[in-house]
Length: 145
Image 1 (tube, helix red, strand yellow):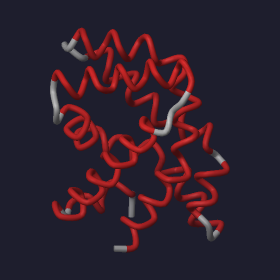
Image 2 (tube, rainbow, N blue to C red):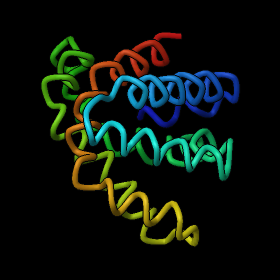
Image 3 (tube, rainbow, N blue to C red):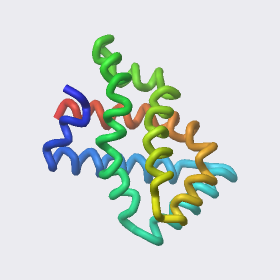
């Protein structure tokens, strides 16, 4: 069964969206250095302009994200360790996820969000790769519940 099929249950989908929002908040708050300051400021700007924007974006993008990483997850299931496999393939996983956001941001009518994304996109690969192990755990919890 594809990962996104499990989101047909609204309660499960809400739990996954909440967990992913918490993961995003945690990842942003843990960033340091000059780039971390820039990302935190940008994230705060987005949340200040539209407080529910990130949660809504995660909810909207989640089915596409899960579809994008489903082949990688399936490889891990076949090997007996989907969490480990996704983590070991964090670069490939990040590329799959970012291909979705890249496509969506092109179509966005929100110029503030578009501008922020374009400024931060170059560093996004590394940050998404760093989040993959925790994301893999969220997915694993969601597939088992």
